[in-house]
Image (cartoon, rainbow, N blue to C red; front, side, top):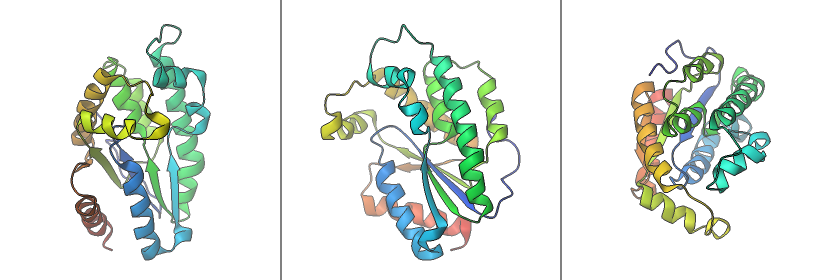
Length: 214
């Protein structure tokens, strides 16, 4: 599984990504890290972003795979290609310019999520997805927040707006396995999302401080 085999990005800024199951705690940790780095570098130096962008998230094909159990009208590879194109556009027109300006970019999901979903759904022989990685910046730190599937689902169901949402439970187990494999293959850092929040913060802070000499 060749992922980001080449050199780190050459820009002055820093790119930190967070991936994991829905309900893994990304939103909480991203908000905390934003505040922490803002104290170090200044709030004007911090950029929060998310992949895929609303352009894909609001599309009929994306909503079908996220919200419904029947997918006969669509091919998942088509959605992956759309999402990959969206990531290239977003990475090179929004993330890279920010990195050139010396900003700290924190992304809620990244290329790894696209890869995990493709592999978890059975598309393990698609080589194009790895070639896509050549056209986007490699993160300086790639965090993977790991929680058990039951706990992730419990957290999602606790949200009022998602208490009745469709969840493909079998897919969640496959996704968790893929995230762990991808992290190991790409030099990512797995953080348990089931430990106390303060402990989780300290773990992330320790890694960020060490990598960037803060």
